[in-house]
Length: 106
Length: 233
Image 1: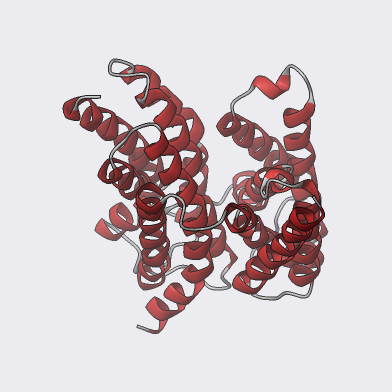
Image 2: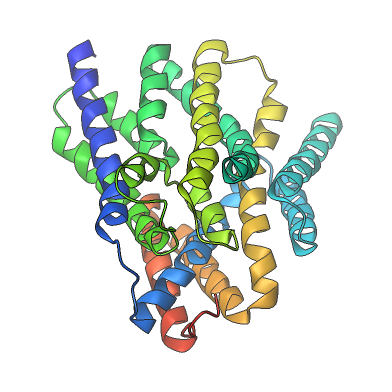
């Protein structure tokens, strides 16, 4: 691909993505009072993360058993309200252990 | 300064998760024959995963698909407008004007979720601190992936893939314990997302669109059946 074409694509991608993010953020200055809208916006982050995590987490490590182990460890630690970093690291460690075991027995 | 540091601290796990995800983006871009600086520029200016992977697929088909590129980014990233609208309600007085034009660039799923999860209103110092390391991590991971492709053994690369979801769970599980309405909204969104993944016809819907549909439906159910009372957030 020619350099010019690359930069046109880059401009379109970055421009559209930036405007989607910034316009609502800049336009809404006041506080919304409508209960439905407020409640809707309150639930958005939880809904987004629920939809993004499941079922994608099962496919995240290249091995269902490793993903399941990571998921279980993450759930236990998150339930005990450990920090984001702690939960993420131990989920990776659990997945890595299962992945290594899977490699060893193959 | 205190809030800036707090933001930096909260951004560390996001940045670590991003390094592993953007690493795979760098790998793929290099695999498609792009230069390392092209991959890095895409990550630095877009700061989004699904949109970039989709954009890469369009780019490698060659020049001319300008409209398709714009529409793809619009659909996949439309969820960000819901998030920035939501975040605008939690921004304090210091986060106004030009600061919104700048920090708005950094609204991603994870940054948004962490900002919304903090107890207090979000100040501009906190936002600048929060977005800084994830932007660096996202760009650096892309560079590593594009340049040094095979440094990490595959088993470690694979295992790092779950980092970002571990973070998500750490964000949604604690409030779900305390607030059963939140738990129900999470379960509805997760179940719908599984249905889209595994039901034959629905599995053709693009991943960005699935997230929008599940989010809007689950949050609307929450808003209708469990309206949030004044100041109970």
